[in-house]
Image (tube, rainbow, N blue to C red; front, side):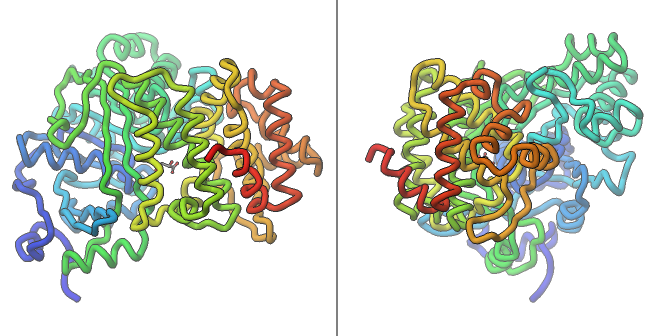
Length: 495
Ligand code: CS2
């Protein structure tokens, strides 16, 4: 088969493929995006593409890949172009996105990331780097000195490798050069994400220079944002599907669901693209939207990931096809909704129903094992926060305790038939140490994992009711096997 996607290939694409309704080449880059993974390509890059098509402007995106060089090698030879494959129940469509100008592979090109951050035309630096990459100790609201990138960047600020180090040095260079700062837009699934990054960055900067930290306080904006689009990691099938649609190869294609949502606080002193053209919603306070999404979508996702993976369900859609698990999904959605403050114009019952349908989308192959990774980073906001609310308000703890028990069971690193798997959690060593210290007893294991610092707050970890429930469900999973324990658990769920 012929050729590769790129500007030259655009004219020859089949009629059914939507292509950029603008000429991307002359448009400058006003955004630097750190973390050019599938999610960024299926989300922010798409909103920006729509804004560029409708109103133009120098708002293309220069990406930075912190560790991998793969995405730079895939996108740069394609002039930044890639296909967005949307897979809904009604069918599959392909659209070529033109908003990414280029990708810098930091591992190969050490100077280029700072040059991009300090460039006069850079007005926004957005991020999708996953929860663990920031190196922020969220419980203390400070940097985590033990985080490898934080330690390295505090030792050598002028050659930063991590997220906070890059943001700090980029801003420092701008200040030194008399340039206005960029706006920092954290698009990771973290509660109050703008403020969180601000807190971490201020602590990082203050350790180097308090006057500089003061300048950040006065001049840099960190709007919070809620992002949503279910985007499985691309596979060989994704690339084959893209080639079927395009007639040329595309090594950076992504597949995603039709649904997409972006809620943003409108605080961009240096300007922004008209993302509302792509459907983004601008609000004064994102926190309630973020809590709803984290607790309902992501919290349920994590529960499905652990209980589903351990019951042999490879994809989220398989979890929804299992009657017992699907009941537990609906129970969890309802329990999570009950912990939220009312949000004008939003019915959480409808939202829950829409989520259940999205999870069941038969055209999306979203692996439970993908969602299961980094549990210690995800559980605090997805599970512990609503569980604590439920505890304090006398609500049913069982759905949350079930999810915590499934995570505990997952931490053992083997399925019921003895198959081993990698946990893929940045705190694997701490988990192993907790397990080693707990002996073989189910209660001891559950307690040791619940007590890992920073995952469950003191009020839960020290609560006998919570501990007893988690330990009980976990020991059922050990004794009967996860699939059977799930079936019995579903009997507790309302129909
Ligand atoms: C998922 C999210 O992998 C995970 O932890 O829960 O990536 C989820 O698919 C997105 O937040 C959906 O917007």
